Image (cartoon, rainbow, N blue to C red; front, side, top):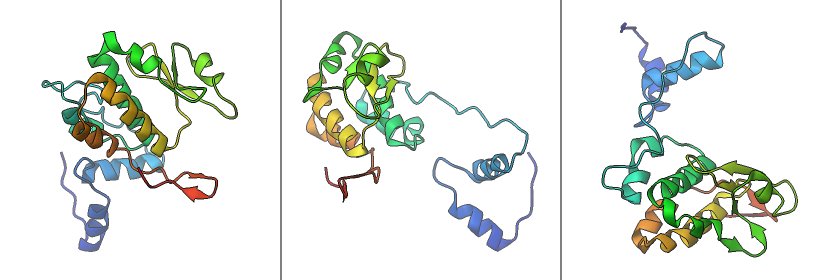
Length: 181
């Protein structure tokens, strides 16, 4: 480890880019990588799909690894992956989920993508053989999770905690920005 001197105004700007989970060192590394610097980023400590010892979904979404996930789709996939890992035997409840005629979950990418029209993309749920529709705005991801979690016995306060971690994506549909849930 080396020590460097920074002017106060430079440090203040650097400090504004940090978070509880993104250190000064991380900010500098990201800036250097964006400029083509040749070194390897550190391997993240832990796995965002690791189940906390108490098995609580609330503990999972409050974990540092989960909170480091920045996109709605990654958080959505992480929760679904956690559900698969902790409720494998009951996961067919997710596979049977429907809203209208659209296929949201299936055992193949093709089945999901053929279950709708337009630009449909599916992603595999981590650590599972199940695929999910990925081209969803964050509001719809929250609705789906709010529909699914009670099937596994989660209480409303737990469900609220989970869905609140997926913020509005800012995607517009029909000229309206979805911000409500």
